Length: 245
Image (cartoon, rainbow, N blue to C red; front, side, top):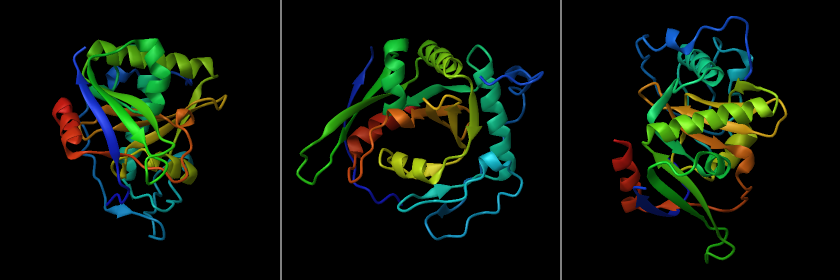
């Protein structure tokens, strides 16, 4: 459904907000993983689900063109927001999966702090004109290095603390529009914005179908691109798929 054209070069290398008496993440890990029900794609002008069982901060009320967005049921969104909060408040691996996509915005911030975990380097070419002029390369990383993912979790928690704590909420229309340029697929729930109280960071954290955190990006570190696009080739997308299996 995504209508943008994408261009990417990838190479494979082997190289809080405190609450009163929060339940530890360990209280959640033995629960059956709820099935993440992905609805049809919603776009601009399409009536959205009621979302009546969500708290106001998790309600998505506007989807801008040309974004396509998939909703989960309200109970799942509330549950995973709670799981994310406990993961951010505690030490350890928490709800992070064993494979994590660190997209360019987050990787720009994380790399000096966490080193170079084993995995796939994703070098994304951002093209700002049809002839490829005025282009730039942003780098991300897809990693299955569990100690490296743990270092990323530590760095994330430190950044949240240093900017005064955080709140968890849904994506806003202007954030979807900015993030859409950098995506190779529709926006899928459960996805959350973790915004620091000082406003310096806006991390976007997504869960995979296994109920684990599978992706992280940071919106403020991404350049604004009015008319740009990115595109991974079929071969390069297969490399990413093979690394995540």
